[in-house]
Amino acid sequence: MKEYIRHFDEHKLFRKLKHISGKISINLLYYILVLFYLTTDKGVPVKTRIIIIAALGYLIIPTDAISDFIPGLGFTDDAAFIAYAISNATIYITPEIRDKALKRLTDLLGKEKANEIVFKNFF
Image 1: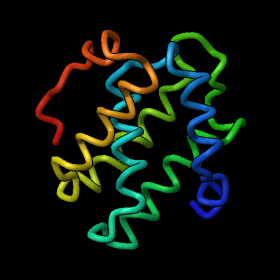
Image 2 (image 1 turned 60 degrees about the vertical axis):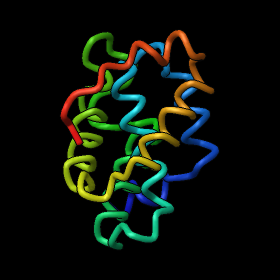
Image 3 (image 1 turned 45 degrees about the vertical axis):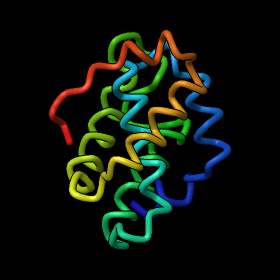
Image 4 (image 1 turned 120 degrees about the vertical axis):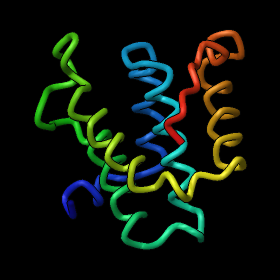
């Protein structure tokens, strides 16, 4: 996990999100943003924050288990790590965190596209 943690950087994350926003689902993009906002939340324990930062670092890293360039499979490993991080952080996701993530999603994609997000009882 240490290897992935050192790759986490806010600017690199948002550059990567702009680059992949058309290649991943809107929901996955939203969950990534939720995780990003949890990294600065003081209510999130250090152990959980480490998992989150590692998952986001893994997303950023250019070489991972399954190359992001493989159509249909490229982001499955990234999505699995994001899902793992979300499952560890669910109890810390507040309405404020959800609102910040949705606002940032709207800023990235525009209101019309952001409205396509499908909220499920994930958290």
